[in-house]
Every structure is written in structure tokens, then in C-alpha cells.
Length: 253
Image 1 (spheres, rainbow, N blue to C red):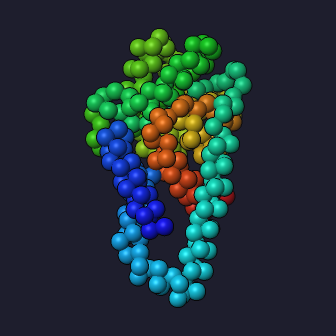
Image 2 (image 1 turned 90 degrees about the vertical axis):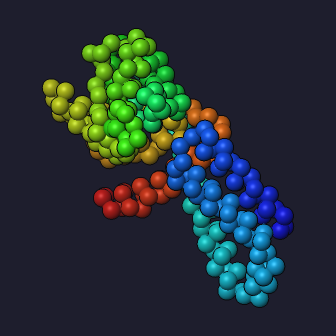
Image 3 (image 1 turned 45 degrees about the vertical axis):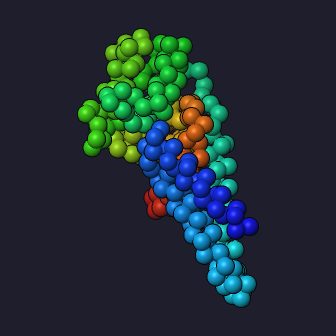
């Protein structure tokens, strides 16, 4: 049993080292790194911890209760994430909204490129739809995500008159709120817009839920993410979804 904790810790640390090479470090990566160190600490202090575990019944009950609650809540939230992965949109919609996902050296990140490719396919299939590209300028980015997204769409045959840029957002909520305001300003009549949200598949449940909170009739189309970052992004999304339901949803009914 002791060696199992060591193996889990080493696997987690190796995974985090690989993330540093291929992806951005975010909450998901930090959580995985922290658990990896925790498992290694259990390996190092296994004998004294085992003694405490065998003698302190109250400690066992507390730890097992907390662990059980975390597992149950995580499974429920992961179920919600997985329930929205499949595309669920009708054929004709007013707008396509592409959410930003970072840029690298002035080019879309691999995750953002997948989202944009998904948008290009839809926009070419339905030439009357407009597209909102949403993403502000990060502290380490030379230009806004929206401008890079616009350049990518133009290079792939989407005319400029169909593209609306939203260049201030720094979070999913701001992506949706600021984009909604832009769509409303462009509409002759203000009503809940029918919008197709294009984001990474793991992100759709939260994005659609927030969009509906803002009065949008929201549908979703999810792009794939590299297999190597799936643990990272799902851990991060579980935490973000927990925050949404506990603080955002309950705090602003």
C-alpha cells in the first residue's frame, strides 16, 4: 500500500512536468501537483501516519467522510460536464460565439485552433450566420485574443462583415456578457438571441448555463482537446463548476 502512494505521486509529478512543456499552468495543474506531493508525503511518513490512523477512530471517520463527500461531488459535477459534451444545436442560428482559449506568439493556441476550426465548418455550412469572437488581451499577450481569432477566420475564408470582435473579456462570464451586449446592439429588436457557443467540449455545460442566466437561448458545439491535457482540464472544470453552482448561481439567483 505504501508503494502505491509513491507510484501515484511520481506519476502525478511526471504529468505536471509534461504539462509545463505542452500547456498553460492553471488551477487543474496546481491541484494535480498538490495531490502528487501529498501522496509522496504519505509515502515518506507512512509509518507514523499508520499508527495514528489505527488509534484515532475519530480521525478515520473525519477523513473518510471528507474523502467520500469530495468523490461524490466530483462525480456528480463530472457527470454534468459529460452530459453536455455532444453537440446539441439546430441547423440555423443567429450567431456563433467562439470563446477564447489563449494565444501563443500571436497565433491561436492548439485548443483555440480546434474551436476556430469547428466555427469555420459551421460558418461555411450556414453562410447567413454571424460570428462573435470573444477574448481580451492578456498581460503576456501582444494583441487581443479576438483579433487573432478574427485573422484566423479571415485566412480560412470567412468574410469580415460576418465577424464581430469582443476584445475586453477575461473570463467565461465576461465572454458571454460582453458578447450578449454586442449582439443586442446589432439587433433591431432586443430579444434572447439564439446563439451557438463553440468551446472545448468539457467547457460547454458551464458556458451554456451561464449564457442562459444572461438571457441567451444557448446551444453548444464542442471541440476536442488533446488527450494529454484531459485530466488537467477536467479537474479545473470540476472546480470551476463547483464555484459556479455554490457562489455564482446561489449568490445571484
